[in-house]
Length: 93
Image 1 (cartoon, rainbow, N blue to C red):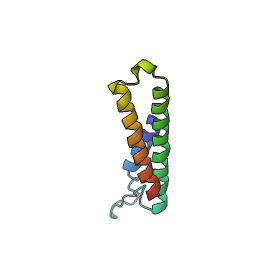
Image 2: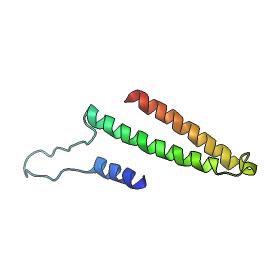
Image 3: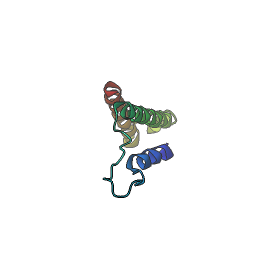
Image 4: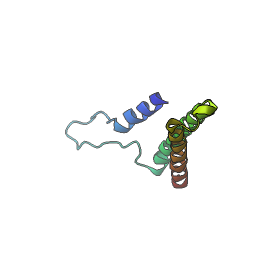
């Protein structure tokens, strides 16, 4: 997942090589069209769903006596926040 995010960031910041010296430089924005933005957002949704699933697995594997801890409550809050983010992204695209 981290590799996918790194790839996205590299593609987002990539600049095309200057093919015509003397011409005005134009940058190609990988999220310049609605289709490209939608694809990018769907990729983010997929990554967030993976993070949420991993967090939920960690919570399920937490022993009963630690389920009242601050760490467990923080995990619950993270899952809730990810759910909110997913709702927003899914409404947008």
